[in-house]
Image (cartoon, rainbow, N blue to C red; front, side, top):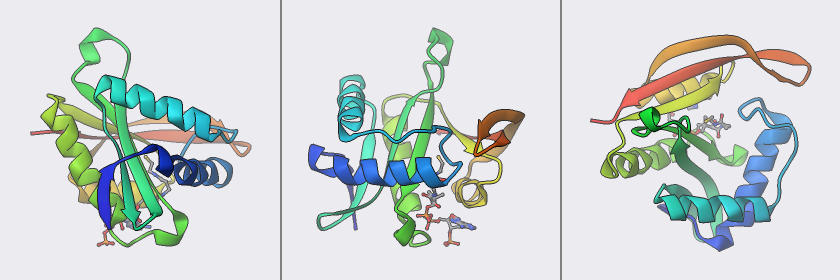
Length: 163
Ligand SMILES: CC(C)(COP(=O)(O)OP(=O)(O)OC[C@H]1O[C@@H](n2cnc3c(N)ncnc32)[C@H](O)[C@@H]1OP(=O)(O)O)[C@@H](O)C(=O)NCCC(=O)NCCS
């Protein structure tokens, strides 16, 4: 497995992984699937900002991806980023998220970011466990701020200072 920057050829597989998470999980509080053009615009934006968008690949197969962006759009938050990490459902528990997160944190650190935040569905035990294993602490919970699949969802913040 190789971790590298996303290239255009990865975008159909990334779109499929993301759409599966949108349609079948509460890891992402989006209701409707998106298309490759949407991910291409995201890739262009990441490149323009110098923000990471990483893929885990084995040969031509994309196993997962991770990225970070601004936490909030105000000047005072400029040293804090919010990330996301997604692994194809056929490849969970093989160390892929961990392999993506370590260089993702390095990339944020290397451009001077200070804090990395994950905003997770409180029922997403896999993601909470992953982040705790990576040294993130649970620092907040916002009850019932999300609504998907006919139920309210609690948001849990996990964060790590990037020393
Ligand atoms: C959360 C997610 C990214 C984890 O990816 P993964 O590649 O399976 O995770 P890893 O194999 O790197 O796991 C690393 C560690 O995290 C923890 N972990 C991961 N999945 C877990 C699970 N289902 N239950 C308990 N602990 C888990 C374990 O400590 C694991 O180490 P171990 O396998 O040596 O015990 C994956 O389940 C996923 O893509 N879920 C859907 C999308 C999502 O929830 N993304 C996060 C929101 S930002």
